[in-house]
Image (cartoon, rainbow, N blue to C red; front, side):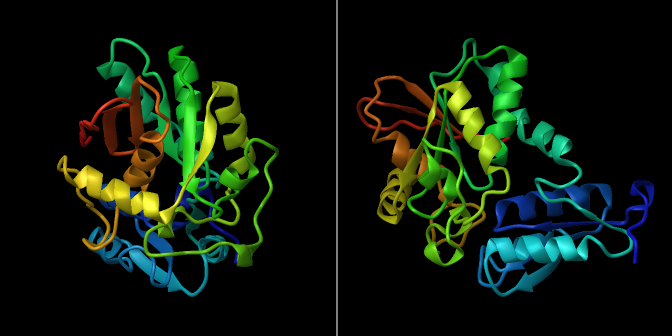
Length: 273
């Protein structure tokens, strides 16, 4: 079957390892648009949050990349549309992800010393770089990923190269941060390079240590099971603490902003938007 014209779209189909699926499930639910989320079996909370938000969760054996392939197949069905981050609505995705930069601009009197952003597909890095350029802010962007398990991390500072699909290791702690192919990897590396930033790796041990440190300041996992760290904020915190820079560093991920200092005990200020 041929997909219907855009005006007749009745369902968004996406792949996720967790966060994007939760966000899309909530957004589609808010406007009454059906949403199908393809999730690797055993990942995230198994789709519980997304189902509660009204999405149809389709579990598939394999990796995130396998989920992407299945979502693209489902998106060819009548009335469905590909809502993945690199799909036909990529410009809208970048606009949405870039709102965190506009939020910072509204809150701060001057640009932050740096922005630390978790890297998976590279979408948020690209979106924030675009938004900061529009705002006239020159801010170094630092991408952080799971050590050895994301091609943005392993490619830096060279050109983008995909990883061997059998060469990545998924654990309970790095699960949403593992990709053997970043869908927008080359453009993300270009954005980080143009900003004057860099890409950094963080191990599972650093994630766990950072989780305990964040807990001391009231930052607790929200969408992950209580026994697991919330990967994005803890990953950023883990790596930013090791830079040794005596400067303000903002850690950013959609929905979470944390302010820490490079000297002395960490003092994050976590805000929800």
